Image 1 (cartoon, rainbow, N blue to C red):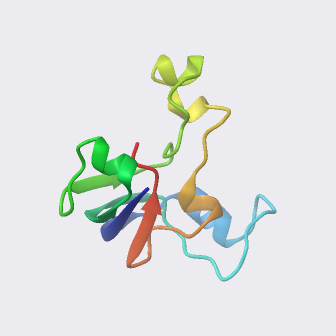
Image 2: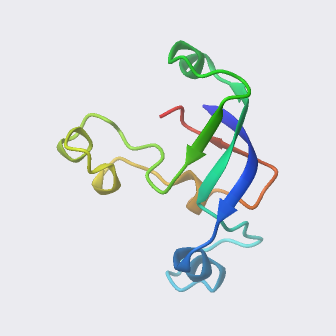
Length: 104
């Protein structure tokens, strides 16, 4: 995993849907925001092995934590990954001081 100190975060309609519980699975208190730009604050061992560095600017988007191995991922359609997860939706969002996500 990578811990990111958030510099900027966008908001879009899906954030508003989470705030209003339009999809029926919101958990409160809720921190919105799933389009994040920040700087790496800390790295797990897998992230270090991939060449990420503390202080490096990174982005965390909707498709974070896709598997990278299925047909959708291999063809560049990570948003359709059946194994993927969106860490900023079911966990806590980008309108926070720090955020953790997979190194991918």
